[in-house]
Image (cartoon, rainbow, N blue to C red; front, side):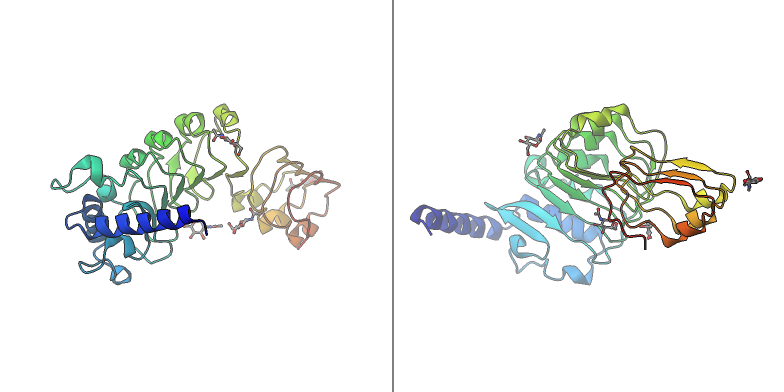
Length: 279
Ligand SMILES: *[C@@H]1O[C@H](CO)[C@@H](O)[C@H](O)[C@H]1NC(C)=O
Ligand SMILES: *[C@@H]1O[C@H](CO)[C@@H](O)[C@H](O)[C@H]1NC(C)=O
Ligand SMILES: *[C@@H]1O[C@H](CO)[C@@H](O)[C@H](O)[C@H]1NC(C)=O
Ligand SMILES: *[C@@H]1O[C@H](CO)[C@@H](O)[C@H](O)[C@H]1NC(C)=O
């Protein structure tokens, strides 16, 4: 290792140690109030007075500032309160708001309630994953203030309303956007065309109820970047004669049940970016 890097490491270590041991660090207070809002779960036992907060489970610091909070799949069960973003009055807000946070991963827990609009204050966020919870309400337009975001996963929740246009006009660094398996309504705003760097877009699923359309004979999903799965119930569409999946980027294989669509004559899966297995 070069001498310069060694010195940098020493410096980082030194400044981290200094900062985290300072009692009453505003970011530490913020984390403690967040833990309280979760009713002090046992999995966060390392979040205690004796340990520097940069060493707490799920917390990563750089130069003494919290840059990542990653607590996926820990059975955390609480309203996703704004406690991370709006602080106990003792904390100076410009310091306590975890403004250096680049990664916030709270997926696969049991968070309830609405997405706090205060999330929009975490201006440095690059990764926001709150998927797989039980979040309700609409997507706050303030999410559109997170202009550094590259990865946004809101999938597998109970969110409703439409995709805010601000999300699609401002978040131009997005490479991955997942809002699948919610109860979103409305059409996809044309502003989606602004997300030039997007490589992954998840908007599904195709509802199981599709199978109720017994008279359906043509199903054209072409040129929709759906990235979702074809429900097995498609086999109930006995009258389906044309299924066009060209350029749909469906995720997953085409279910074998499609064989039950006895009338299927045209089945276009040209130029698909899926694995080609007929399961
Ligand atoms: C949809 O989200 C709910 C809630 O998180 C989850 O229980 C369910 O398994 C998800 N469904 C799919 C198909 O992923
Ligand atoms: C899009 O990606 C390119 C190449 O990775 C990068 O240089 C550019 O900064 C990105 N654009 C935005 C708005 O993030
Ligand atoms: C399926 O197609 C046949 C022939 O066109 C038609 O007679 C029948 O009513 C259709 N079935 C349904 C459920 O629409
Ligand atoms: C397909 O979806 C599954 C479940 O959501 C996910 O784990 C997987 O990464 C996805 N595959 C692709 C190719 O996007």
